[in-house]
Length: 403
Image 1: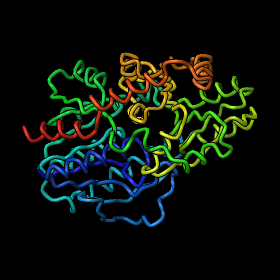
Image 2 (image 1 turned 135 degrees about the horizontal axis):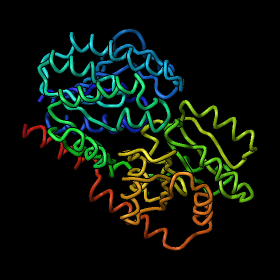
Image 3 (image 1 turned 120 degrees about the vertical axis):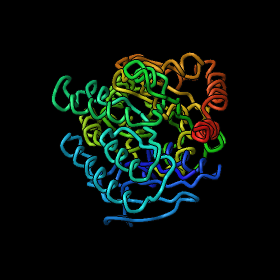
Image 4 (image 1 turned 60 degrees about the horizontal axis):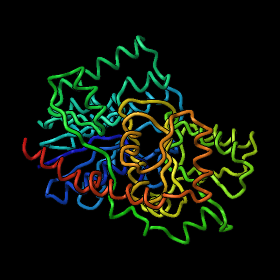
């Protein structure tokens, strides 16, 4: 089949949607599908167009996947106005470029959020005569309300809810990365056809064997620290101040170091807070290329995954990569991600806001708590059996082929 992914975010950018969609596209291409990705010029999370990109249009190939890139207004600002400007700029440019460059398609999958991209997707599905697959990785506008970005009952909320309903009604298939997302949608729209397109990771890429002496030296130049790593977006939803507060409690534990790798709208504020609190046990590192992420995780002593509060359906992809890497996982979250890790006894699970618990858990791991190796083995087995990305892609391909 001829399949197009419509997404604002794609490699060489680093992030969960980028990795998930690029690997899914590659795996579908391996099955013989003609894969196209319509995306924006890369700018995430720095808010600047990457070197070598720019302009109104660019065509490239990533293996067997054709990539069409269009103009976008880049920003990493937390300002709602600037973020909307970025989203809407890609809505317009993708609709224009897709109209004249895509040609006839069988399936068009759009990634949401941003929810506004659904407007371009509905148009392009009609133009290309494609079946529209609306992929929901986070529930919006519900998530925006919980994070305080949108006020419930406001004009923005009503407008976003209307757009959400329109996108669902026009979709041939609605996919979601968590069962909570699909349950929420099915409860409100019982006539929709849904499919669980779960997140996961490539277990051939992530694993304990990926640890490297070079990466370890970057994390621990002196060779005597216990490294607790967070790698990913420094955004509002991640609640990374919790890590800094735990580091503040453990500031006298000189062997423990918290390393935050990545970028995002909250990074400058976090760095300022760490400086204000004089946290010498917190290091901030620049984002690493996706190819280096397996080595980064496997070379850490513990991996931190945090959410600021309960977000229905939010299951960070980082948990799968951490579990596959066979390193101790410390998850600060509630909901489905906590259930996945907790039910399999595949890591430590703490409620958002439990700063003391986070500090004590890291302290215990640094002191060699019993049973950690067995927990890591269970975590690896869970990912291999249920969340390997190749198996996920195979199930999704079969669903599309069945029509």
